[in-house]
Image (cartoon, rainbow, N blue to C red; front, side, top):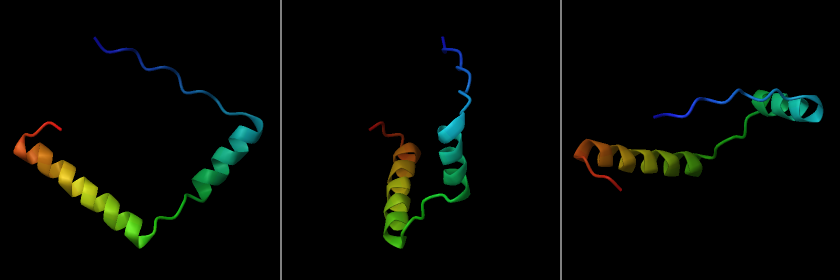
Length: 54
């Protein structure tokens, strides 16, 4: 049986300010990082298509 989902904590003060800034300015991904991420994604999708569990 699944566990219930906990409530999302509310951020206050400095934590809230840092969170807002991070949402406004997400980290940029370099071309190499994107290519690497997409290559990993393709490998994992092939596992699912072929029915392999790794």
